[in-house]
Length: 384
Image (cartoon, rainbow, N blue to C red; front, side, top):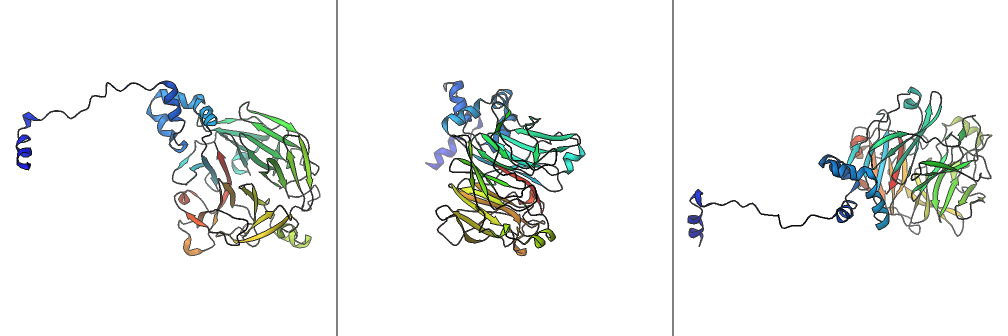
């Protein structure tokens, strides 16, 4: 049998082309094509841009994003801005793909070198900061892959609380342009590219944190207009358009029980590092590098153990503590010198937390660490 096969192929003149005729395969309809491409990973969209003008225009039209919303198809993306690089990196939810975003167009030296804050709304990354002549907001539209200036907040601010709920972003508190501590709040709508004023909070506060839990926008901790640390929280009920006062929400958290003299001698602490996973609130206590969970029934905090990064090095600044789907995400300087990985010692870990457990199982994530410096200026998670 083998000899016969060898003989039949011995004469090159007998060889015929093995190309297959695909002419009988019908073309995909535009609707079916869009349904398929809507499921294409966002981290790979840059390949579609390069494929041809048709796919590039389809991505820019926003049609795929609309389909993703209709079918409930969502992916997580992590946006990070390391110190010393003046750029943003975008990673997929598994940190398998990491790409550098187009350079943010601002040439203002105050904005480039100043503090910035970020939050995601739908497929928009919102970055706020200060330019020479006042506050400014830049937005990166993921579908188009470009930066745009504005719109500015109605009440421009810095050092405020922020959180994402679906396609909306919420901000509250902070320091206004007149340097006064604010209690105002706003909501950003990426569909209309506009801000909407919300009712004012009960308490003026700066250096506070925000999160979404129980379908409410929570604003936690911070400092008042006299620079006193706050243990209270507030929750905005978007259905009733009202704020609920929550006394002593951080009462058991040692980050707000420092004596005044000791607090004055310390570096300015970061806002509380909080994240919500499976509708449960977690906090990274920076002075001892421990994760705590808020027990809603007793309104107390339970210690779940150490994190594998040094959140205490800069009083919580430079560390990311975020929710990533059903997991907690922490990025920071490694607590173990031997596990540094890259030269900066920055590491990425995730875990699936359980409030009833006293032991968090952290998993080391590798892939994008070489893009990070020893200090993370900004980090935001987008689910779209």
